[in-house]
Amino acid sequence: MDLNLNANFLFASLIWGGIGMGFFVYGKKQRASIPLYGGIVMIGLSYIISSALYMSGACIGLIGFMYFLHRNGY
Image (cartoon, rainbow, N blue to C red; front, side):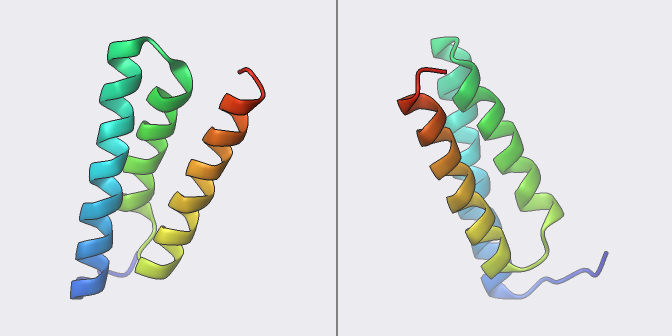
């Protein structure tokens, strides 16, 4: 894995990791599995993906997937 530490990557990682942490804490307090596991995956994506653009796309897709699961009653 290539260590990419430009400002865009660091800012995107901070933003998406923070949003993932918010989902995780909300899911833990409300005992809701979708935001809990979605938050864990989002935090992991901010460590795994080394491009700010791909990280943002994956996290937005994950939020859309969690919304879809919530709307369908899971």
